[in-house]
Length: 377
Ligand code: MG
Image 1 (cartoon, rainbow, N blue to C red):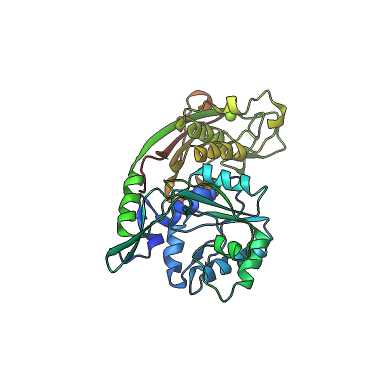
Image 2 (spheres, rainbow, N blue to C red; image 1 turned 45 degrees about the horizontal axis):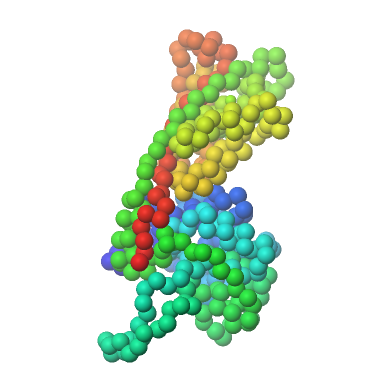
């Protein structure tokens, strides 16, 4: 690579390769934790690359890939996960559908890897000359993530101290454990050479940017004089009265949910969570946002930025802005720099001016990756 930066920290669009790789599974509802393994000297680069993401501290790698994976597994062992997906930092374009396929296969197999049949004709070469042609009929190229029952792969790594395999599946194979395959993805390229990096950049540029707008209003519940707080942006702030609503009435998160749905032309919050449905009574509105984020993920859409405006005379929003932005950062997996939160009044005019309720406007910007638009071979 021409750059002096280690590969995972090379820029790809407005983030690093590593961040794109993490985000490919960060919002997946079945992925509970992501443990990153880094070079010790890359700690500063790592912190910068993962700003706004909520991850356990990274662990430091070993002298080769196998040793590094082992360190990662040791860190996860404390949580006793049932399964683990082991992934290369340099594969940022894992489609959500591939993660789904691996997790589905892990319900009936202990070791599952994605592979693609080799389509190029393979030659044995010595001294710049072809010696013979390899029959490729049974040859597949292995990708990551590779999925395993956690106790199995943990045990294999603990016992494999004198070997050095280039993937984790090889440890299972060496111990005669059956390794199941699912179809890999041509977009799931591993960035190894300068040419791969250029391909990744062109793939990343092959996207559509879309925006969505959301708007919502909730009235104060003036009959409730005992609650003394209301919910905004997922946090409770002091207020004379709470807001009225079927759910927790978080007007900001409702506007935000509609903005996210708007980027996908996926209807509105009322269609996804009908107020007539008793299961959403007093619901925590963060789950509405999480639902919209899952829809984004399924479309390979990456949330890039939100701009939220709260409109009311009371309560005063400004003192709570830092806490609200932190809460939104956690909820959305976005750095603070991508979370704009503004507050305004309507100069005493209209329903907000009369102190009858709070209005919220939200704008969301997403980048939607084209599927299978580029072929690695
Ligand atoms: Mg609402």
